[in-house]
Length: 103
Image (tube, rainbow, N blue to C red; front, side, top):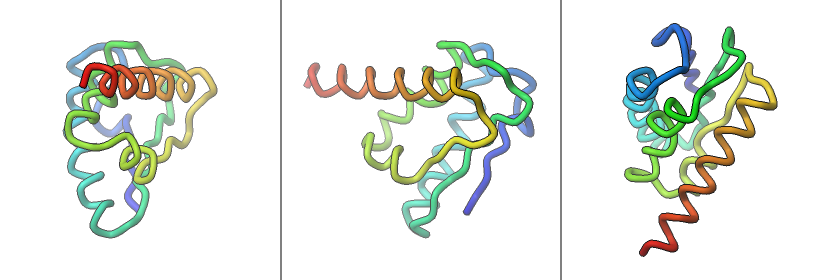
């Protein structure tokens, strides 16, 4: 099981630039996870909050490459808090619903 330690790549989870860095790592790791059938653990150790800009760039953008089911099945968030978990889950689900309504 791969572990993506966010703090190895960015010092904060604040803006689009931070999110894009994490997005690129996630795309690679999720593609590998689809082959190995193992989850990618995403560690937010050392972070107390994330912004919507970061979430949109790091996670919501994944919907352009992966189905929501693949994101759910091949990723899990660790070393986090309720606020971060809720924010990411809420934005991904909202964006996935909007995607299907738009089609």
